[in-house]
Structures are given as C-alpha cells and as structure tokens.
Length: 315
Image 1 (spheres, one colour):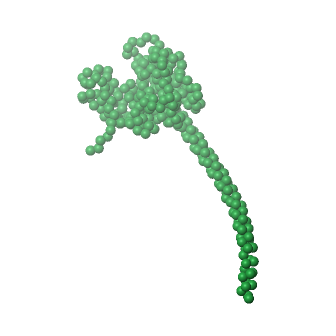
Image 2: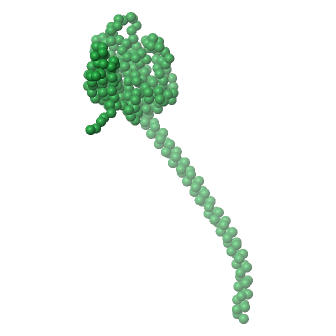
Image 3: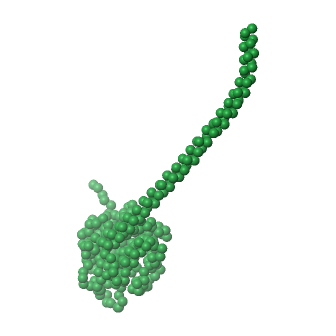
C-alpha cells in the first residue's frame, strides 16, 4: 500500500456537533469550491471529513506558507526574479479563479503555500472565497492590511449588512502582496486596523521608493482607488510574464559579457605566457654562449698536448 502525505485543515471546536451553523456553511462552501478547482497554482483538494471533526484534506505543501518564507529571510529582500515569479504564480491562480466567477477575498502571504523546493506558489484557504454576484455581498471580508478600500464601511452598518463590490478587490490585495514580495516588509507595519482602513480609504499606499520602474507601474495600477481602473488578472499575467522575460534576457546578456571578459583575460594570460616562452630562447642562447666559451678554453689546452703526443709517436 502506498501512502501519500497530505495536509489536514481542522475546523474548531473539537466536536462536529458543537460547530455553529455559520462554520458549517463556511466548511461546505470551501469544500464545494475546492472540489471544482484544478490548477497548478491552486492547492489540490483530496477530500473532506465530517466525523469526528470537520476536516479538509489537501496536498501537502512542504515549503510552508509564503509568509514564513519571507520572515525567514528578513530583512534581506528576495531576489527580484524570484519575487516576480511568485507574483506571476499568484496572478495565474487568480486569473483562473476570476475566470470561473470566484472571488478569493482574503489574499495574503499566510494563505499562500510554497512547493518543497520553494520555487512555486499555490493559493490556499478559501474560507472567505465565494462566487461573484452582481448583487451585494458581505462587507469587510478579509484582513485589513490587504483589504481593498471599497470593502471598508464609511458609514455605520449593521452586522451582516452587505455592500456592492466585485473581483477587483482581489486585484488590490494582490498589489499589496506583490509589494511585500518586492520589499520583504510588512505593509503599514506598526499601524492598527483603524489606521490601515483610514489610510487605504484616503488613497495612501506603501512606498514604492527604490523599486524598479517596471514593477511600480503594475503596483500603482493594481491598487488604484477606482476599482474599474484596476487591470484584470489576465492583463497582470501578461505584464509579469513580459517583465520576467526581460529580466532573464538582461541576465543572459550580462552572463555573455562576463564570458567575453573571461575570454579576453585568458587571451591576455596566453600572451604573457607567450612572452615568457619567447624570452626563454634568449636565456638558452646566453647559456649556449657560455658553454661554447668553456668548450673553446678546454680545446685550447688539449690541442698542444695532442701535438706533443703525436710527435712522440712518430719517433
């Protein structure tokens, strides 16, 4: 029998009988949605259980959450290409969801999981996800730091009261997550929920100082105050793909130049070595001359002796 490691999400409290009606509805909605999804950037649904506890079973993502991955590398920023690659994975997953009429409503790093090699991202936790309707939906759904301004209530609303908004709330949340990936910082760090809500409603956004121009334009369009001015995820996917391709081309060009420089240095080294080799014959010639002089001196001594020896032999 072959065992497959899985991840289990357990709904509290411990006993199913003690779970509230709202929690049961949330569980049913998440199971129903997950069972419909099949995409490389969405965590794979395996099954669900209602006894003894409410549980959702999905594939095991050994790379842990994106949030924990970023925390482990702070304060050092992530590699730019890796940041854009992660953002592209998120955008592709969201493009699939929006195309199927689903709003996630709680995009944030803690709801995104990494593969074991920590190179790819998959969307997870669809507890607040729902099918998009043209009518009104529950307001203030999500987490404040990543929540679109149209989800905030400017006027007092009754509990459960609804507002009109659409899938563009996910585009805003994506922009905040993308900013985190680029800076490896917490948005509106140190500020409470009331301040974050007020800042977002007044069109205040995290600083884009020192970020590449290409990503700044994407961020600013995605977190635009007017939801209609925000791009669709299919447009974001195209922009990020082109940006990543451009960075890869630049890297290849730099690598090619480095190889050329190395080749030039090697040629220079060869020339130096050649000069050394060329200088060696000079040294050999000097030694040869010295040897020749020594040989001549010896011969000058031997020749007279040979003449005397020859003369003796003739007598």
